[in-house]
Length: 330
Image (cartoon, rainbow, N blue to C red; front, side):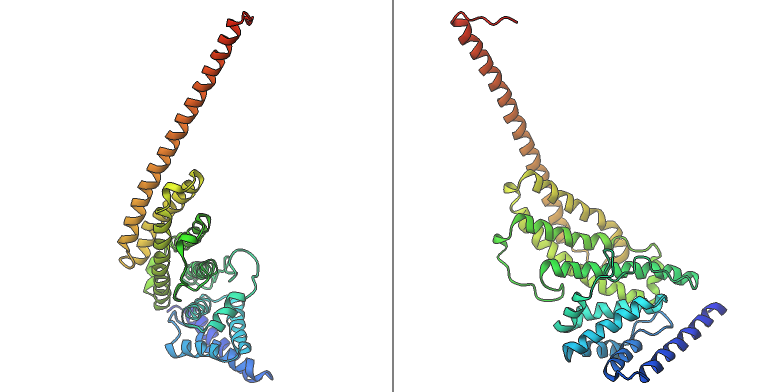
């Protein structure tokens, strides 16, 4: 550990102590106690994930009143948006991810309702950068990527109407419109698309905090693949009744998913291969291409017949006029 890194670690420790002292002096006892729970889970220091009991303490805040849950989410967001330290930011995101996965409904509800601060990423970290040292700069890329993954997770949940790790609501798939299925597939594939934008510094996965964050994302991706499989299978069964535009949109979406495969495999190695999904994608693409080709050929035949019909109609009219002695001069 270099001098600058050691100095940064000491400074971070002092900041944590100062923040804790500040909460003890607060007159708002309830809010201060909630903030202490968040501070203990998101300390400065090494890239080690918060201890299980720290995360459990955060999750427990969701089993109280709605006011406590609201204070919890506000405290996490305040901590996340005010820090310029990549360690703290990653720990905040990891905590939020655990809230999404393990939190009570009331806690997740408060998280989903948190107001947007501008841009597409409600976590507002698209420009995050910690330039305290070279490793922190590279870790900043992981912060931006991870924030985007959590945003995609919440977008998927809003579209589906349930969180990924929750039991899916029973739906009669036959009653769902083709356009609705296409929208759901698009949002699900956006998740995979962002997953493939993982930073180039994959070696940083040796840091346990990054490793654990990727592990949680990997679990989300497994659930996303499940949701994609169900919808591709259903829409694939309707291929023959889809319009040409719908077929084109469907093919474009699954081609985009196919394009993510190689990059995602570099991140997840052999995890979540899901050969059944990729076999389904391959077969569906072949059926779509064949259906679209047949439809295009059908249109060409109809056009040709229509042109020939117009020609015959023209010659018939000429013959009728000629038979009456009414020649047309050119």
